[in-house]
Length: 268
Image 1 (cartoon, one colour):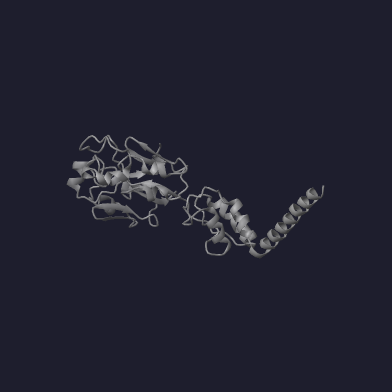
Image 2: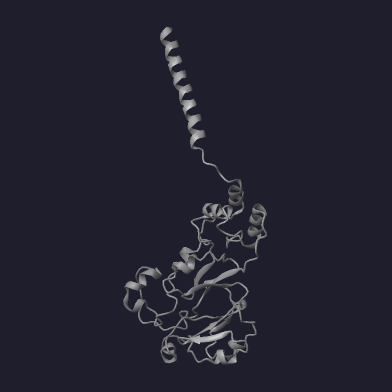
């Protein structure tokens, strides 16, 4: 009986000492958490996509709470989340411009020429290791093997007729597809911008026409037609400045290759 009592006392004493030690350790090494940071984290979407430029939602919440990042830094949450974060921080969140990804290529399998039949790994990044950089004749066009599709966490981009197409209603402008494209064909543009040049080729007109039916040939008709100085042609490729564009559509009408697209007409 004495042995049992001694064992019980020993176990109880050990437990008491461990409890005291853990209590003291908790006080000594306790990490102070900013209540604002926790509140901000609760209203962030939780996608951890990295589109804000930080490692994830936890890192962004910490940055906002410390004043390092603005209240509207989350591209996925947009204005609704920015408003909530602003209320937590006691500031008025600036209304950011909604962005969406855009693929600068219209050379689908019906419009671009093919040099050979490719049967290897279906991944755009692998095309750097195959002859001519891929089966398609255009060295600037969409390869169509879906690296951007795999990268998108919102199911907003798909391969249609051999080229990537973005559903701008689903797109959260996280930028994952932009990073994934080895040919830098995808860029984030204002959601409201209607007219855009759906080509990336910098080749001269003759070479473009030999590779693709709809590529920009750098004829400058769009540039000459625009009354607002929004269109410029550099390196044989037209570009539209969203800050100057008024959406009149005259450049699209003037384009002989019909490569300046109205995004309202886009469907997946």
